[in-house]
Image (tube, rainbow, N blue to C red; front, top):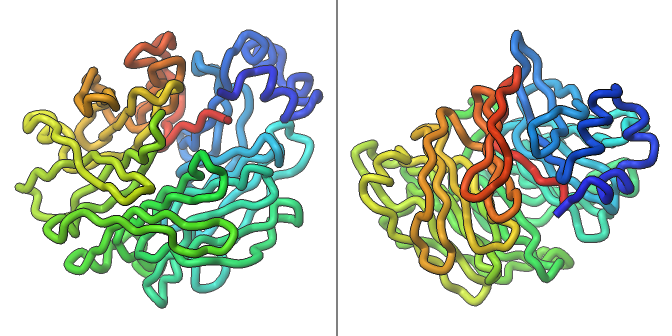
Length: 363
């Protein structure tokens, strides 16, 4: 976990000194540092760095709505990605010593809201769409050279969303949501009848496909979107169903690098409460619990990874953001709520802005 002392070391000695006194004191007593894209009351977008108690210690302005954030202690930089289908990403220095750098997706591409650094912090990988060809790509950016886009490789699918680096440090796992979008049509989903979601494993060195996993053909409208990795290196995923509203398919499952993919069996009443939508997935610090959140259903679940059964159901209106804290989770909502669940020691707090869908533990 990204503890305060390690964060300050990577951020630079001047970071705490640059904060307002009460924010510096909040950071001094914090155990962990988190980040989330936010929307300010009255308009305007940004990203905030927060302690586990929900105390804001720094903010970064964004040109439009942000989605997820990734951070590299080796690079000493964080990156906020635009909500899909967006065309910007903002690179920021948590120490505030360097002005934020706004990246613009190249012509014919847009971002999908997620990215991840290489283990050495020298490369940034971002999910993107080659929207004229209708194919997903991973854009590769040189973090040592002004974040110039160096190359790309395919995601072997359509509509890639979240990507994670596997524990081996050399394999990316990518959730291909299977949905085609185009900036000319905003967030309109253009291929619901022919969706093709999948989970793929890709070699970062060559871009070669290691493996591609699909659910059965009858579930082709079950878009695989967000992921987390448990203690057994299984990739848990959450889905968003784009088929008939009266259907109620299972929404949570896991995949493995040796070729297994399956959905777990959640109770029918729980599925009904989730309203066919999982907006985020996170694993606890020990990897023994996975949290999933549905802002559509105002519900957060904690799932025991050994039994694949829910160990907790928490009502949270418009709740979506999840990040590990202890063996539980910090959760956030679009109504500004910040709270601990499933064993977290965090107390409830209400902020004067709206959280976007994700919380990043800076690790």
